[in-house]
Image (cartoon, rainbow, N blue to C red; front, side, top):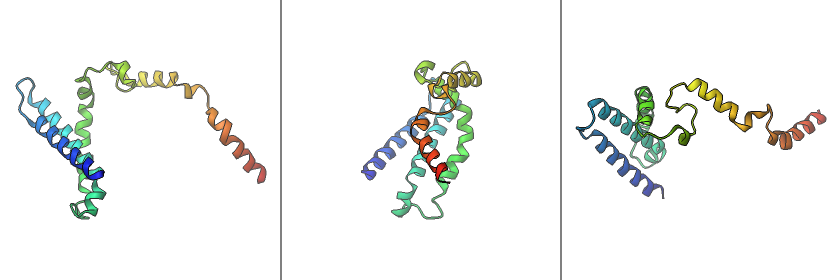
Length: 145
């Protein structure tokens, strides 16, 4: 149910925030601050996603309803600057990510272009699905005009 999911998400978000905010001896303040921002972003995303339910149940007032999204949007620039470092910390190989913009070499423009060239859907200007199903409908409509 949605209530059970919200309950589990609230516990996970709380645990994430508490772990992120815990002082570390193995990492500096910058790492702790980045993790706190990330956990806050996660909590704000959950609040924004559930704002309709929270509004309907009276946990949020109409005046409060836009606040999670506003705070989330305000936090994005700081998290965006740390996104590559946060992903690199996981040491996931580029091939496993299968992402043109997540490559560790940082040359995302060339990688994105190469990724697009390798995509089979880009082999032609028109998708075979369009030619098989929508093109005949388009022609039939033109014939009626």
